[in-house]
Each structure stands twice: as C-alpha cells, then as structure tokens.
Amino acid sequence: MNRPGLPPYLQPGDRVLLFDGECNLCHGLVRFLIRADRQGKILLATVQSEEGQAILRWLVLPTDRFDSIVYLAQGQHWLRSAAFFQALRQLGWPFRLLALARFLPQRLADALYNAVARNRYRLFGRNDGSALPGLELPERYLHRRGE
Image 1 (cartoon, rainbow, N blue to C red):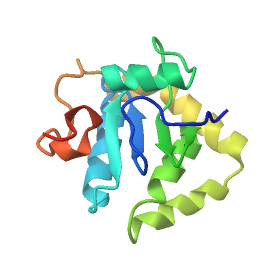
Image 2: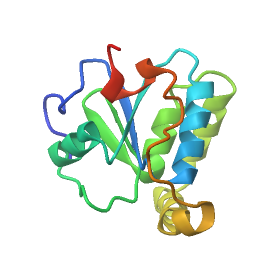
Image 3: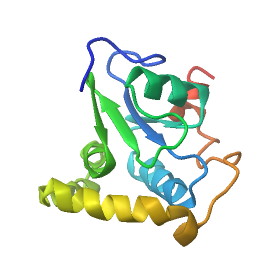
C-alpha cells in the first residue's frame, strides 16, 4: 500500500533507507551504501529513531519489532529484498549490477532475506545502536539533515 503525500520528515525527491540501528549486519550494509553512494542520493535513518518510528507509523508498519529494511522513494516504499534492490539501483557502476539479482523470484528472494533477518543478531551480533556508521557525514542521516 502506498499512500498519497509524503511521510513525516521527508521532502520531495528524498530517497530514504530505514534500517535496524542495533543490527551489526545492517551496519555493514549501511557502511557499504555510504561508500558506494558517492553522490549521497540515499538518506539513512534507523527504525528506532524518532524519524524512523514516525515513518513506520505513517506506513502502518510495526514499530516495536521490525525485521526488514524499508526503502522510500517517489511516494512508494519497498520492504525486504525489494528494498535492498531498489537502493542498489541508485548506486553507480559496478554496484548497479547487483540490482540484477532482483530478477530472482520475489518469493525466493524474500525467503532468503527473512531467514537471514530472523537470525541476524545470532549470526552477526547486536549493538546498542549508539555508534551508527557514517555519523561523521551528518548529511547522510535524516535526523541530522541541515547540520
């Protein structure tokens, strides 16, 4: 379901990736995106942040236990593997090639995504969410926009 209008904190043209700020695997993904997204097209926010929680509520998604990244752009949102592939499409060469994996059947891609998501803390560890990757680049985070 995509609602008309913009979620809270977003401006026209924003591309935002919501991720679990306590997940070490998610931190690795964010570090990769920061390096690969040289033009800074994708803004970042944790699902635990004030902004992330408001966006999740606006999208009518769970706010207390969330096992998916969310990608928002152009009035739409994507979850799980679709969110990952949409974010990859924003990156330059050669990273865009990774987006070709979106041609996997959605059910298969999401089944793999869900299996990893369910076990992410056990496999990769958990942190307290205070040391987010890339905080030295305030323009990359939705909650630090304009600093």
